[in-house]
Length: 129
Length: 182
Image (cartoon, rainbow over all chains, first blue to last red; front, side, top):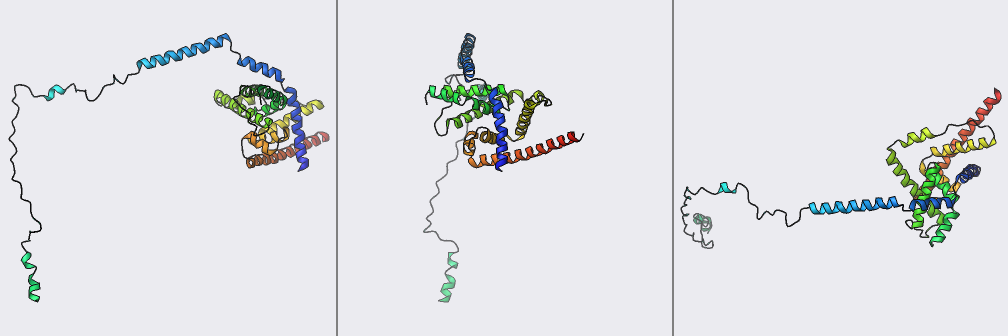
């Protein structure tokens, strides 16, 4: 197992040597990073244009957006065919008879109430006596 | 760590970092340099901050790995599946070895090809341990996996690689015996 590991290590060491020959210098990498970060005039103009477009888009969206006070409310709304519901002026309005009044029903006293067949109940008891 | 310390540490590990970036970018030197620059930029601008929980090198390798993975995802999105085809088309044909130097180059290329056949995690684990002399625990930190998982990737990768190397040796021996007979 140890020999196998050493063999793998040797292979990787070879790769490492080859890769190190390919490696660019640290300074060149830093120079490239600086070049990437540098803001050129053209890039500045592009950024400004993008910001301007964004501001205009937000402004247009805000202007077109319906305001809450302008939104229709249900309370004040009337149907366009509301006029059809009102009767024409030549037709007299129908008169209605007042509803008959009813006498109030006397409340039943449940404690004093007796069933019509109450007399049948005590009979067998009396017989037994 | 202030900016100068960070810069000095980056410089100290630069060659190794490039080797690791190459491993993370399928041995493409341009992609590796690009990933390395982006990773350095993250570190220098403070977007990736070293908190001292691990060794600087371990942390830096994790930043490089993540940066390379981001670049890979972006590239995959751009190419919409054409990447593999393009890579295979660009792979150079094997030239027959003529001297010892070429022999060594061929051996390296063969070994790289074997490594490339391994699943990514196994390849990363082996690379970090054998190439960069990291412990499996440090490799786990770089790979962003648990120690157990890193150990499994390492063992499986090693086993597979050993098998392939043995098969490769048998093949070479058979070929040289055939040429000696003819």
